[in-house]
Amino acid sequence: MKILDRLPISKDRGALRFGDRYVTIHANQILVWLSVHLSGVVMPDGNIPRFPALLDTGNNFGFSAQDRHLREWAGIDPGLLEAIGDITIEGKTVPRRKATVWLYPNVPGRQDAAADRLPVRLNLSKGIAVYTQDAVPPGPRLPLLGLPALLENDLDFWLDPERRHVTVQPRTWRRRLIRLLCRL
Image 1 (spheres, rainbow, N blue to C red):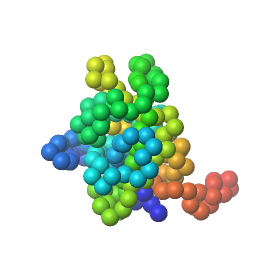
Image 2: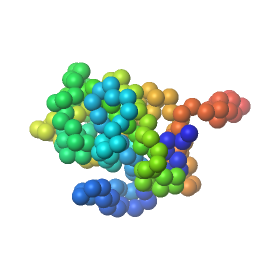
Image 3: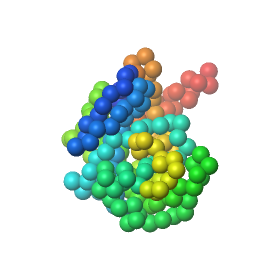
């Protein structure tokens, strides 16, 4: 089961509408759809808000967002999420909170979330980084899903640079085959 199936990488800068909001997606960014809920939630509510985030393989933390992203986009007060310490990101101290993060499968070949498929619950043992309202700098422009989220959840990440898309899926037989071929 592919979670992200031939998810296109944007070629040009463009505006994305979700709800009554617009955000800019720059060229070469990978757009994904997420939800955030209280820690320990096993199944997402049908009405939990979905919001855009960027899959950023250069980000060395699992999930980062501004306080306002959680309040305005996820519909959750960060104060309701259990504090679990701080992390230093680019020399700044950022609070970590316990939360459940859901990654929504895309419509194959498109950036849209697939309405007929359930999201995948991501294990983020180090919590999520939440930049406070008064943080300077204020945090990422859009929420970021980092490489550690893929690694911690044992997900394969496939980049097809010719077709400009990515695929993310649980471990498959292909991983063993590719490792074998790399040894030759």
